Image (cartoon, rainbow over all chains, first blue to last red; front, top):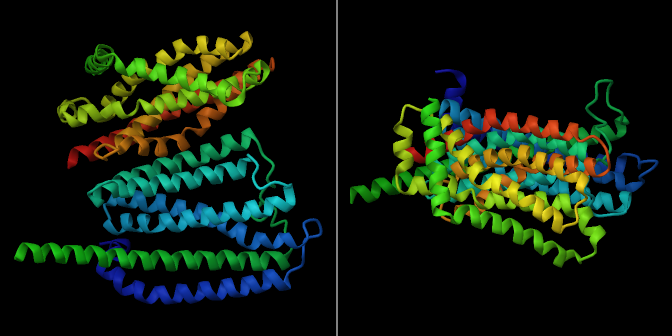
Length: 243
Length: 223
C-alpha cells in the first residue's frame, strides 16, 4: 500500500486528524488574529483608496480560497473516481460548503468594496461574474450530491460534476474576461515580483495562511463528523439485522 | 459501428417525431419566451432590436435545457438504456448518438423558428446570417453540455430543475460568444473571431462531454 492509501483509510484518518485538527485550528486563530491586527491598525491606508483598502485583507484571501477549495474538490473527486477512495468522496463533500462560503464572502466583501470605489454595489465585470458562476457551480455540486437517496451514487455523480466544472472554470474565466473587465489585474502573483508594499503584503499573506488553516480545520472537523455518521449508520444496520 | 450509431440516431428521431410533443413544445416554449420580452421591456422598436440577440440566445438556451429531461430519462425508466448499454457499441458513442438525435429533434427546430422571431424583434437583416450560424454552432454545444447534466441526474426525483442548475452556469461561454458574434455583425464588424470561438467550444464539448455523460449513464446502470 502506498502512503496515500494508508493516509486515506478512515481508521488512520480518525487517529491522525485528532492531532491535526487542534494544530490547524490554533494556527488559523493565530494567523487571522495577527493578520487582522496588522491589517486593520498597523498597515498604512492606500493613497488612492484610503481606509477602504482594508477590505482587501478579507476579500483577496477569500477569493483565493474560493478557487483553492474548488481545485481541492476537483483533485479529491479525481482521487475518488480513479482510485475509489471513499474518504476522498467525503472530503469533496466536506469541502463544498466551505468553498461556497468563501465565495460568498468574496462576493459580499467585493460588493462592499465596490460601492465606495466604483460607486456601485455590483457591476457585470469579468471577475465578479466568474466568481458568481463559481458560486453557482458550488451550489450545483451540493444540490446534486444531496439529490440521491443513495449517498454513494450522489457522491459519484457529484464527483463527475466537480471535474466537469473544473475543466469549464478556466473557459468561463477567459470568456468572461474577454467579454468585459473593470477589475484591477492581479498584483500579488506576478512574474516580476509583487506590486504591493510589504506593509500590506505581510498582513495579506498572514490572512491567506489563516484562511487556509481555517479551511483545513473545518474540513477535517466535517470529515470526522461524516466518518462517525457513516459508522453509526453501519452499526444501526447491523443492529437492525441482528434483531 | 457507423450502422449502430445511425440506427440509434434514427430510433431516437422516430420516437421524438412520432410522439410529436417534444419538438412542438420546445419550439412553442422558445416562441412564447421571446414574445414575453416586449411585454416586459416595452414595445419600443429600437430597444427591442438592441436586445434581440441576447433575448434569442437566452430563450434558445432555456428551451434547450427544458428538453434535456427527455434525453435519457424515458429510456432509463423503461429499461431500454440497459439493453442499449449491453450492445457492443461503446457507451460514449451511444451517448453521442442520442445527443445528436436530441439536437436534431430540438436544436434544429429552434434554428428554423429563429428567423420568424428575429423578424418580430426587428433584428436588422445584416445580423440574421451570423445569428443562424452562431446558433447552428452553439446549440450542439448546449445539447452536449446538457447531456452531462441529464446523465448525472438520472434516478433523481424531480431532476428537471436540478439539470438547469447544473447546466446553465456551464453554458455561459456559449452565450457570451453567441451574442458577441451577432453584436459584431450588427456593428458591421467581422464576426469570425466569436464564431471560431463557438466552433472551438463545440469541438471541445464534442471530445469531452460524451465521456462525462457516459460516466453518468454508467453510474445509473450500476444500481
